[in-house]
Image 1 (cartoon, rainbow, N blue to C red):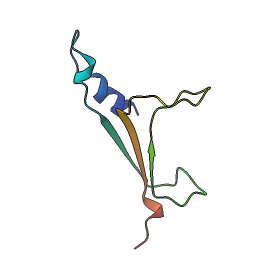
Image 2 (image 1 turned 90 degrees about the vertical axis):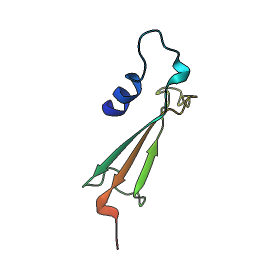
Image 3 (image 1 turned 60 degrees about the vertical axis):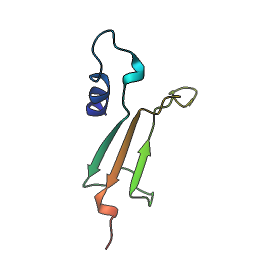
Length: 73
């Protein structure tokens, strides 16, 4: 997440308008199962408020996890 957040936050110089920000997708490829018991290979996460589970209304940062052990040929 820190690389995606850094890529997002370093797009602007001081005083520039937030509307100039471009969306960022962080791609995390694992050689282990992060979400065992689930059968998907690719998981996509967006920001959400922790206590009330409210979605953050701007979908500019997304994390995509790919679990290599779940791939079959």
